[in-house]
Each structure stands twice: as C-alpha cells, then as structure tokens.
Image (cartoon, rainbow, N blue to C red; front, side, top):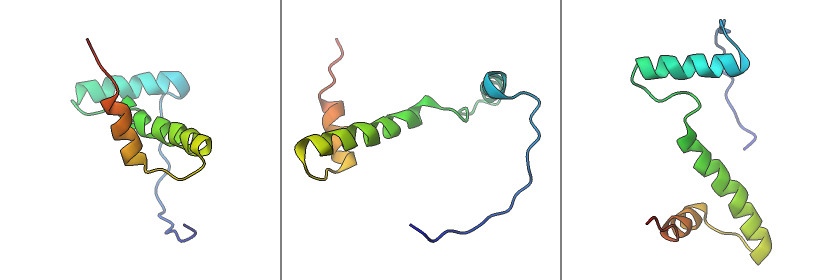
Length: 79
C-alpha cells in the first residue's frame, strides 16, 4: 500500500470548471461516442464498499465485496 510510482504529466487547461466542466465533458463524450469521465456505473462499486463496510461492522466480520454485490444484485427484482 505504501509503495507507489510518481508519474509526472502536464497540467491540463480547462475552458470550463465545476458543474459547467462536467456538463461540457459529458456532451463531448456523447459526441465522441465514449463513456463520460463521471460515468455513473463506477458508483455502484463505491456504494458496495460503503455498504459492505456497514454490513461488516453490523455482523462483526469481514466480507467479500464481490459476494456482497452478487447477493445484492440477486435480491433485486424488477417487475
């Protein structure tokens, strides 16, 4: 965890920042037929970590995030 490699890169100049920047990036991604940088599909893994940590604290032991995600997905029923 403590080992890392520093990768130097050029600073990006952005024409728009904050909310306007997010919208501009999203529209550009739509034009380029690619996922936007803030693609919501990544959020499910963030939520799995948070909810998994809460469940782990509730039951008092470690749990496997992949199993936790599969269990949650199996319990969702759409009609």
